[in-house]
Length: 101
Image 1 (cartoon, one colour):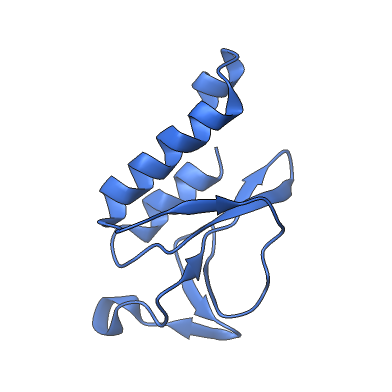
Image 2: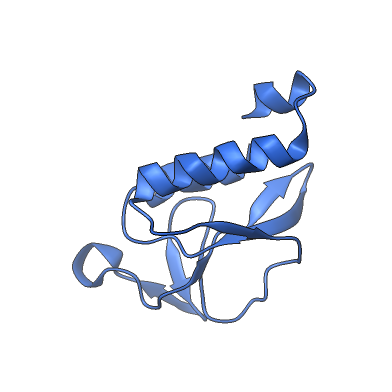
C-alpha cells in the first residue's frame, strides 16, 4: 500500500484497496474508514495485533472478538490518521501491518 501511495495513487482508491484486503484477510462482512481519531472506547487492535477491550488484553484465540465493532487505528507519519471499523477474528498482526503502511 505504501508503494501505491508513493506512486501518487488517489487516496480514496488506496483506502478501497486496503478495505478489500482487510475484508479478505480477516473474513469481514464489512470494513469502513472513519476520518476521526480513534475513540479510545470499546475494543481496538494494537500495532502488534493485540486486541484490547478498554484496559484489558482480550484472548481472541479462545474467545474471538469482544464486540461486533473493533477499531484498527491507521497510523502514518508518527500519528494516527483514522480508523477502519469492524474487523472480525483472523490474522490481527497482519491487519495491523496493513493499517500502519
